[in-house]
Length: 302
Image (cartoon, one colour):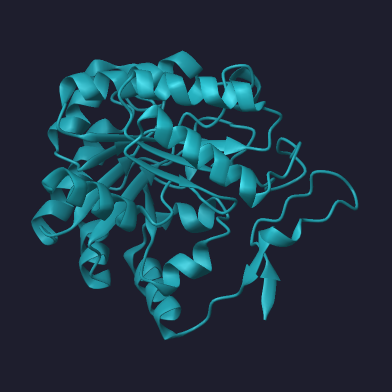
């Protein structure tokens, strides 16, 4: 049985998704077990909140990307399905509950992301760091990848999270510089680059990673320029995927990029010096994150 992706684009009336954006619907006991463990933890997942098209596949393999600091964001990006509203106070026991869920799932690689918390004095950096430390204590064998908001590139916030010792620091550039003000009105293209550059300066041993969406009206030349900017601040891992419109309120899809062009993007990125590249219509920032990390870690140890 085939099912159209979970977050179908509604870019224009009557516009259909191309055939490469259809995939089998995963089922099975592991998916249900993962769902139960996630629900019992009380910790949100970006898989659900962002309506990720890979939820079924990832949960069938016991992969989940946890979203801490609540499920309401202080920013309103035009591509994101997460609710924008006044957030609740962070739950003091969330780091413990998160670590317990990671242990129950037996994860060897966990991705922790969060909503933007511009309302907090440290923008949530301390809470994020506590989550990393709790996972380290509960599951010392588990690689930890963090995917936070930009913290307004504040060195104190970045240092707090880096000092907790994640294995990968991931911060998404999302789109090209020309489109960034429209797509990410409360973020900033150059500020995101500064975040990644500062992390490399603070912790040269950390892998840095970033993700891009295509289909918002960018050109290939702009995409190349963005990839060069990311390499220029030392980013080693790159993900590139197709933007899918969550609702009529969000930015429209300007173009569906075919799989062959994603392959070309991957080849160009590797030629620029990225250590690991995942590029494809269904690729998201945390998609197959464990496999990506395993490959680069083996390369480092070779």
